[in-house]
Image (cartoon, rainbow, N blue to C red; front, side, top):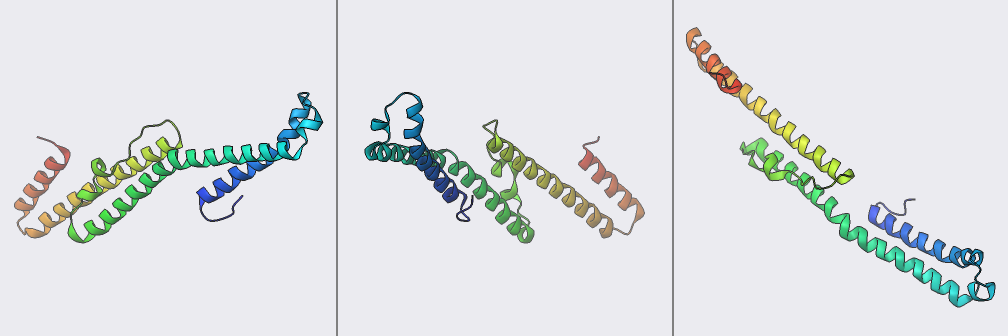
Length: 168
């Protein structure tokens, strides 16, 4: 059920709604347990159970805001930082703001939050590796175009391959 475009508002409305429905149903449920209808089906008891349902819904909303929202906020902030870093690096050549060690998210749970953080971190590593490959290729093509002598070009190519492959 979507009341708004805000997931937390939708969650709050759903939790409060569920609390109200539970509060309305509870007096009828206690009849099965042997509570006399003269006690369970009274206006004050209905008000009390509905209020209790709303209170439980409110506590769930607070727990969601304390436990879920900060993690989503951190993920969104890190994604924005990487986006800004990419935009800046495109023009400045400074890729330090896109470094996986700087922007990585903590993977501290075995749930969807942990899976999302791990996927984000893998994306950062792939981005960094892609940038390294692009940088190496750019350096290689620059070295190849800077020389006219075949021996110098070959030496530059071998040096580049040694450096990039870590070969002796």
